[in-house]
Length: 110
Image (cartoon, rainbow, N blue to C red; front, side):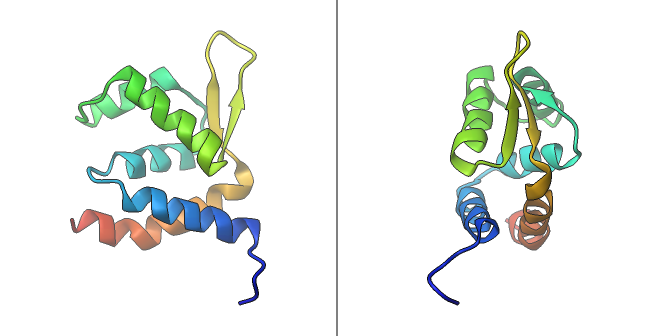
């Protein structure tokens, strides 16, 4: 491969590194949530993780979603209302799904 990476390749690489540090599977769960195509506030994600029996703080969830937005660049954010509303950018959905499918067995077997 040449020295030029596509945007998709860069996102894949960032996602792989991000999920490699996912010790308890929480990041994978949140990414799966976003692949549904829905829009979520931080509170929505927080409540979902609590339902899935993760012990999380609201601030921790806020930081995680914020990082997905800024560092990974895969989320859209709508800041027009009272709360930030996040969704997975349509063009990154196939990349995220492929990473989750490939990494699924790896992460579930741990």
